[in-house]
Length: 178
View (cartoon, rainbow, N blue to C red):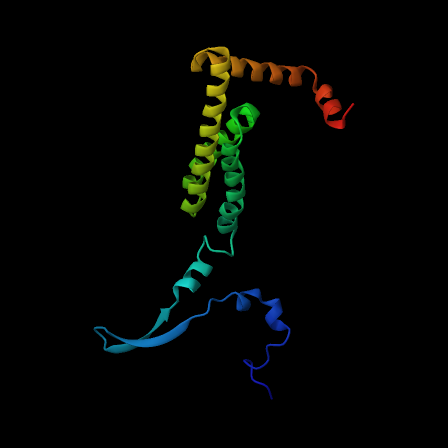
């Protein structure tokens, strides 16, 4: 007759916790107590196993989100090679706002993810630098100060938002290509 440890069969697949146990090497160590000497198991994990099983390891979204977000940071940084006249101020302001909001959020969520916070901070930095480049370029064309340029840009954006709110069908038609 088979022992319970030999009879894994398909039951192993019905119990996913058996498959997700970390690989550990156990040793015994002796501990002195008032009642006498006892042997206690010592769990030793390698650094790679600790990282793999951590709450921000590669088995979680907390690891893969920053990896994927580096693509956005690198795309924004590649725009440093383009002239400021070809950059979109709204796109770079969106990068700046996204980076600032999500950097703050990375310190609020549990587990706190400093890797994701660093990526978002760099996203904010790239967006801020590109926005400053565009505003500086536009200011040099008009001969205005930076404050006047920002006010003009915000008025233009507010006008676009008002137009969308008043006539949302025009946006749908524009997307459909009518």
